[in-house]
Length: 57
Image 1 (tube, rainbow, N blue to C red):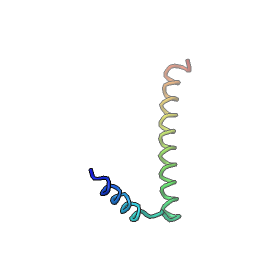
Image 2 (tube, rainbow, N blue to C red):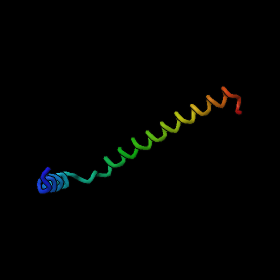
Image 3 (cartoon, rainbow, N blue to C red):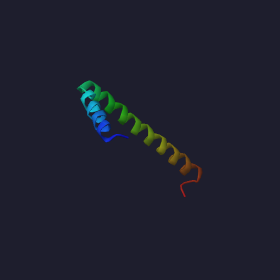
Image 4 (cartoon, rainbow, N blue to C red):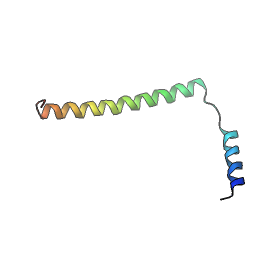
C-alpha cells in the first residue's frame, strides 16, 4: 500500500463525486423513510401478535 497512490485515489474519487440534485435527494429520502416505516410496522406487528398470544401479560 503506497500512501501517495492512496491519496491520489482518494482525490480522484472526490473529483468524480457529485452532489445529488433535489429530485434525487427526495427519492433517496422517500426510500429511507419507507424502509424505517416498514421495519417499524414489522416490529409493531410482531409485538402485537405476541401480546395477543400471551393475553397481555
